[in-house]
Length: 99
Image: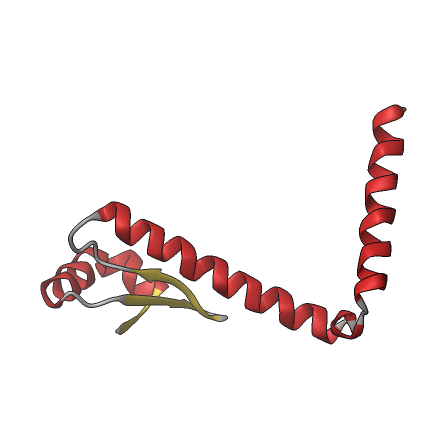
């Protein structure tokens, strides 16, 4: 993987992409606040790669959500408490629809 700053990518992006593409290398674009984007070369069937990329993004999102829930103390909820929370949200939605 090659790390490229966003500033460099703006000025010399085509050069970075060409050199990385020749090696089948992924580019990590980083800004002032750290890594921001991946540029991933397309190899072979784009449909399969798109599916795998979406799965990887979904897994990362789940892990992030679990970490947030754990920090908020939601990881300690019982199944009954979770069901009560779901019922409360559903009831509130039904009330809003009736108005």
